[in-house]
Length: 94
Image (tube, rainbow, N blue to C red; front, side):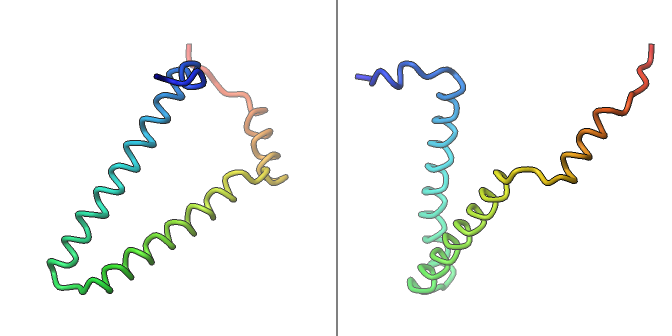
């Protein structure tokens, strides 16, 4: 039984859910395989845990930084450059 909210989603929303599911599944699978590999090459379980913890902290910090930078309003310089770029006529070949 599919909720009405999900029935109303368009193709793009379903693709977004599918890509998110695929990414999270792959991330989880890589984590499990990576633990077996790291223990297999000689790292202790605590070293492997520390490595994965630091990786997650770094990933969180990078994601937070990129998210906060992506949604900043453009600076006056960037806005001026964009308007200048649009106002320059271009040659078209016939």
